[in-house]
Length: 342
Image (cartoon, rainbow, N blue to C red):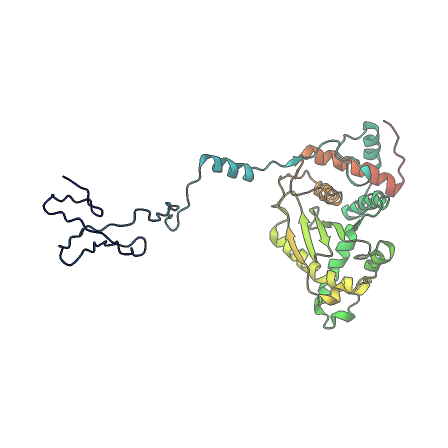
């Protein structure tokens, strides 16, 4: 007669087997070797299994991610690669002919041929500097802007920024900065236009760099920061921009402390403003004299809430906008009669 052993599964013969009452001892903690013994009366022989048994229900952790070697990147799957390419090549937003700027002005629609001919005739003997011409365009923009309710931005004349920079040499040499006298022409900005901080938060300024190179400057008064907008990153250079903006960033706080009805500059201890250049999605090789048009376009687009870092336009659109700016600005500043035609 054969029986299975209760512990180890060993087999005993009928002669060797002794039937006894078995009492199992308490097993130890799970996962460790447990030895089970059989207790029998003293007159019987003691037999037990020498086989060790381990708990089969041990925790086996799942296989973790493979460790990558230092200096090497993990390989991307095909889907991940598609996502990366899509994020890098994020499409920009092209400007349409019907895109409108401040006050509904649509500079990207081709100008009327009759109006354009009148403009060219009026400009034959025009000997004004580019600075004065751009100030005329700024006056045209201000007229459109002032008709808007509750607008918290303003456009500053290019001559204002130019006059401000002429003060920098004397300002640096002056030991008592609080007693420095700015050019009288600068005060007009604070007496004739909406007040900074109380009525205006953002300033838009076209800036003449050298000769006929222009760029736009956006001054965020609350952020105490200046941002450059320009669609040709190679011109002006970073060095040229830094030299101009460093001077402006130092002068603006003292100008604000002198003429603005606020103590923002004093609270900041007249610290210079931060400045940076915004990354633009397109590069436009400006036609001669059109860098000012690009600057004005970008400043107006920002003023109406467009994200200028994703806007894309062409050289042809720049030329068209330049014609429209000139037609309306010339009519406003010189009272040149522009024929009204559809």
